[in-house]
Length: 389
Image (cartoon, rainbow, N blue to C red; front, side, top):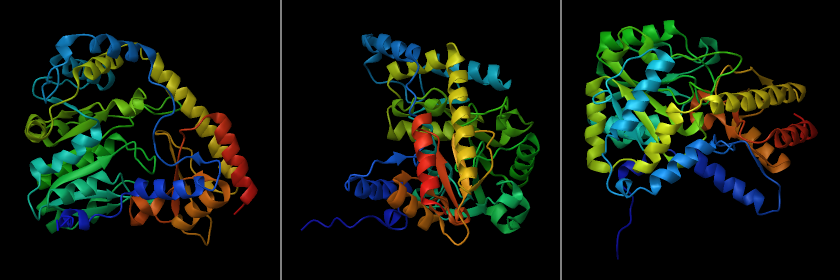
């Protein structure tokens, strides 16, 4: 008899949040309920046509049918570097300071394998995208959680990290604009992070997947714009949200050459890079007409305004976010995150994400993703108001 007992690294993981949500959603859907899914941040807007056409053209070229370079095509890395300089004023060497990724999640998951030894510490925000913690655990490391709370504008309190923990830490994950709280960070915060990292010899990993999804004229910064950032860290970008390319699986990491080299060394032993036709589509996205991004922002801003008003009218408390397509909503008094999410699903057919699923400090909140049409969001508001709280 074969023993299929799972490895210890799997046993210590918390249940993957969205897998459990999918299970509950399927149960309710099987009862014939019309589900409005506001749970997962997967854009419903199609990929822009000029990007699709670039992919088609590149796929027809046999030159792109062979193994790609694990670090990325020079053409793609150059396009990423040019985009960074134009968008943030950050100059990058595409040969040593840029690496292509099979989506930014892949890079975030592999990074600890390059720098974390068993027992090493990574500083991980909470509530947060679960991959920061799970990738640390997979590398044999330990997560020291930095609570993100409203009193501190959902920024980690670096002064609250014990000195002995800071000295033992190898990595720090940060993410702004933030998922799930939709909080933003300013230059002064990034400057404090650089100072903290320099003092304690910590590699900073900034997940910047949402910098292009911002509203009311707000333009989020790159961490790398701050003096000294290139000496201590790196930044991860994704084409998924900016260009509605979640299914295409393409992103890139930029920053300190040693950090990029470490991540690249892991990738060269694990994957064979991104399909070159997809990279050529990425080039078209980064170098092409950016009006598609402006159109995307307009759509989500309209949805944000509609949903924030509807939530307020339903008696729920939520701030109007400057960025991301998430709303971080306080649960009604006397309710828990899980109870609220379950009630919304079972009584209103609405899938939302309980805040505690992102970490204990997320208790008392739930997250909505604005990935439905205005018509469906209006329907969701009507259902919310109907069940009441």
